Image (cartoon, rainbow, N blue to C red; front, side):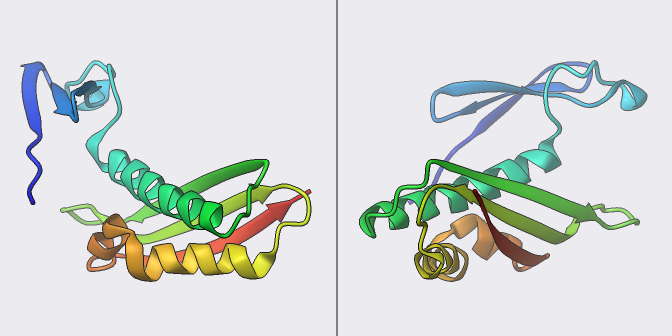
Length: 138
């Protein structure tokens, strides 16, 4: 199986990406010749990671019959100082809200995503230290 993505230059530093039939504009900041018309490419990597692992966690919890009232994945990536700049450390925070959420099931869902199912994690672990924590808010 393969996936094909088209990223077409529009002008200046802006590109239009077509992904699964959806279009997204990516651009650079004004300091480097862009016009700030869309997100930068590197942070979209963090979006991909959060989306991949978030979908895994919700899918696994649904099978366990655990339904949080709220779920959010926060991601913070630390870039190297030298070029090529890449994320050397990525910190994931899985934030849950709800009544009587079983911590053992939350941990199992997160660990299964990180250790077995999330392909984005598997790719990024080759270049970055990925750490995670689970936060349950009342």
